[in-house]
Image 1 (cartoon, chains in turn red, cyan):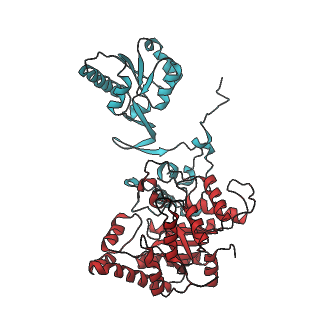
Image 2 (cartoon, rainbow over the protein chains, first blue to last red):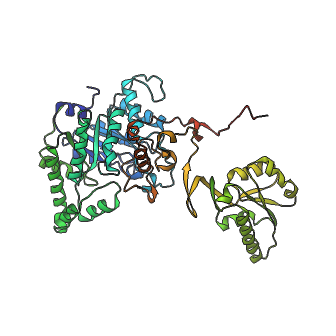
Length: 307
Length: 222
């Protein structure tokens, strides 16, 4: 084992891993974090804590991670390179690790253009791949990105994102290969609605044996309404929602759409369980966290292994 | 070239309205090419200011002059015969020119009439786009001649990010995805293998992050 991460333990055991997501509040109320995390207790192996998601100011990921860790739930520290330079990011990693947080996700983050501070400077001192390299160096060499020695180096289990649906498609496996080369341990993918395209991507991943070097968790987001399906199809960059999915959501009455969305999510999980190289699921029930336990149970992923 | 655009008229008027005698100075270099601050634009702005002053019943004595290069002390020196006769200088050069005039004529108020935008090239008639951020350590040799620092919205060195859609950047469909362009060009050059070489974290000291930069050429410095 490279780290003390529970997620690493689950993946090493060969069980399908389950992670989920908790967006910190747009305010300073710690109870809001606790409420959201409590719903997920026992149903997931670790909870991603987003970092100023969609470029909107929220409680910091590191602070929310500490709150969740104190509840005895394992957080995954998401960190974007948009807001802070390499000094700030490394110091936050030290601080979080000091609080027992040992799993993180290295991201570039949404451009400030999309958020509520479009006038903010965007930092991007590092990109996500260089960030993975830096965290890996902290763990493996015990050195900061700048080269000096770390007293008690943080041993982070390192995650990153992959979007199999963005353009150009022919680069999507190659870009994953770069993240693997940089030293990533696990990947959480963009939400999957176009399963055929995801399987094509996975074929490419297996051809290069990347699935043997990195654990891929398939991204699942249940849709609540046909409106959400249309919005994701038309308005969210890098999202691939096939017409059939929109039709299926629109084919049932408004009251039944949430259940239809959950059904689609469960069917997707069932189908992806059979895809070689899929090592677990990252269930992002956006502003619908209470549905996650039900999806985990109905998809046969409950109970979670204990470590 | 360095590109620029004229400031909103009201902002320029606010700068110069306390004065009656203004020296309006254009530049015959980049801002002439991008039609922002050359002889022609100097003439147009002078007329517009005359009109504006006239409407408010004020007299304006405005002298137009366009220097060969406003960022060069040798040419800025040519203003020496005019400056004393005017209350203020309104510069239509880029920020380099404005500052050079301010440095040479320390007791004279100097105002910018332009917003300096970026180092870029002309894409079509009337359209200019950013090409270079002057990072001080050019990577174009390994990126197929397309700069990810200047042309990727997140300046990512190992792209494309997950927001690249049909060759366009997620923040604006008018912006081409730099990494799509890089990939297309690497393919044309038969250099696809190069894509998977990780570009290491950049040393930004050569860029603006290392503090204001200077070039000292011992062979030329006297």
